[in-house]
Figure: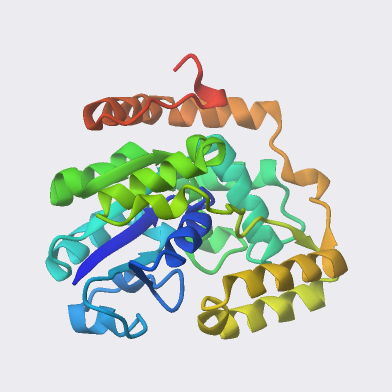
Length: 300
């Protein structure tokens, strides 16, 4: 039994890659895309296998839990101790763009209050990260949505995975995935000893694009329904895309005006991430991965 985990990062195409791979006959996807299994301490291979539908022994068991990257210190050793020979993929995105996309996504899911604009959100996260405020001083009941800043320090987290998995860690640039999905997917398939030709004439699509619900009550109920039906809808990806497209026409709305970062916030975030981005470049060079050209870090 072989395993492949897409471990991050959030809002960097992990859903798309998961769905592309799920359609490959050599892959057995998890019943839910994000199992988050290794975010809890009591892990076993038997317990993990229960998250997958029955299949053949020569299929690659695959899941995508983007939260694994930011929780690397705890998650990496748990995976290593549980899944022998597991391979991992991390898709990296300009951390400034990723933070803005994350904010929009979680606000559209009502995890971030509608009254909290993105610039104020950045300042709140900065204050929490620096220890100037406590969780009780924020509108959140857990720290997940305040840890968005350190989650974008990719190199810091990736080092834990390299320490445990070495050359079984694959890195990918989100921008390259958008530009060349066929090349990227053939590369991933080859690394997993799958037939890469499956993706030569593949019809690529974008999955899990963020949009705001026009009617909040309807959007909230639709999200709950989607969660309940996910194991079923994962078996019929084309049907799911048709349903989402129809729902978006009925209840989709534009992004809120206060969901775009100001230049002041961009500059602050660029300074926050600059050193880590340089370390990411060094990791990419060391692994033979094409270098990144993130627009906020051209001069980094």
